[in-house]
Length: 108
Length: 120
Image (cartoon, rainbow over all chains, first blue to last red; front, side):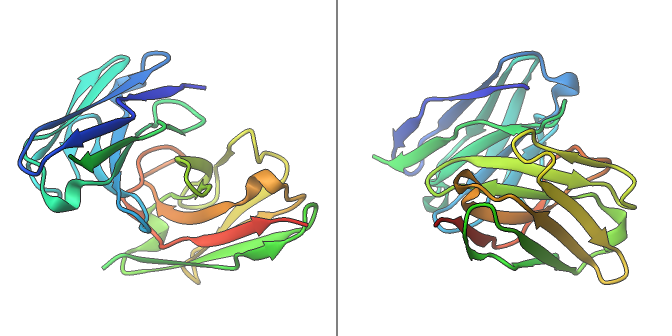
């Protein structure tokens, strides 16, 4: 099973600032099969990025993903109020599909 | 608009069974793999099970293998999860999620979830 470790656990930032979130895998992820989700309180997760760097339909271009192998990054260029939430990475390169433990982006 | 609506959750005693359903609309259901993902309160998501478009392939997390069974009805545009021998650690919100192909991939649409509480 591929274990995903997200860091930092919590990121305290102000609206308009840049957020950089990390997701590290315990082994190389096939074909960079990694997705990112945002989850607001009381809601289901929403897909942001798939295949490490492709934005999902309707996702603003302030969200970008990068990385390969075992190290992946989600960057939010300028934080909007709705971006203060929890972010999860998920790998689908091998079964079982696994999620990271999450990064909370909170208002500073 | 893609819509996934789960039902069937509730309070159940350890060792008992429960069947979850997910009604899908707004897309060609039999073009997509489907999954169940759960999330315990205050925890991250955990993938539970996936099924490909024609039920030819299924896959399960080790934590539920042998106890849960995923199925689908492409005529009724519905996804199911039969859960048996429930344990307290199965307590979570259960989400129905749309996949891509096979039993892997990302989840591009999610339902609102149904809460399963396993307690004596």
